[in-house]
Image (cartoon, helix red, strand yellow):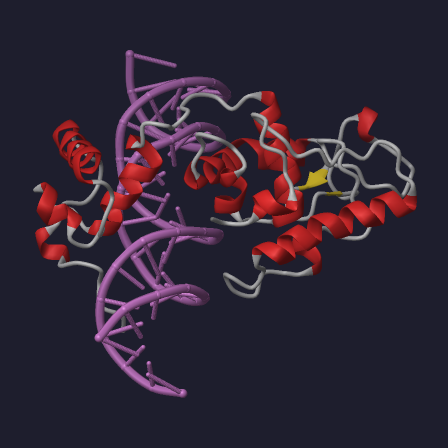
Amino acid sequence: MRKPCCDKQDTNKGAWSKQEDQKLMDYILKHGEGCWRTLPQAAGLLRCGKSCRLRWINYLRPDLKRGNFAEDEEDLIIKLHALLGNRWSLIAGRLPGRTDNEVKNYWNSHLRRKLINMGIDPNNHHLNRNLPRPPHMNKTSSDVTTLSGLKLSSGTAHEQQPVKSRGDINCDQVSDAGSCLEAEYNSCGLPDLNLDLTIGNIPFTHESTRVE
DNA sequence: AAGAAGTGCAACCGCCGACGG
DNA sequence: GCCGTCGGCGGTTGCACTTCT
């Protein structure tokens, strides 16, 4: 049995108060992120380090872009999800100012439903013939087209390589998945392929996929 | 108007890989 | 090589809020 990350008896849980937020923000702006385990005590917070880290990353970081997702962000999430699967941190890394938690929540609450409504299986981005879908979606072609125009004919990256455990697909593999798809589609001569995975002038390239 | 059902999102939990001793 | 610790990640939960009946 793994030890808890902190003594739970002495820590607050649940929603953060304004005072707690302020303490955490003040401390990090002054001292930097440093060691999350010791940060709560140093900052005078009765929280565990993980909780502080999460709060900072998902809510307090000054570079966060809050509010609704733009259409291009939405489109990019769908494309990236087709390539990467549920690798929210990688996907979020392509969306400046967005967090993995935010992207994950947005996917689960909005995009999943949107795809389902369009008759697309959100798990593999294939048209799902079992699902009812609007008349304009009733294609007879064997082509499978995602919401974003990304054609997927024989399985997406994550479908072909189901997630066994975290870390089983490294960034190089992810890049390969992208290039494989691209190569495959190009060889098929699909004209409307759009693999230009960019937002905010950050292209989805092999280099930029790498985690710093 | 009130209760039920649905939705959105912040936060927690537990697992995993990296890293240092 | 082994072990313990830490940070990071994805899945899940809990709850406030909104919409529906």
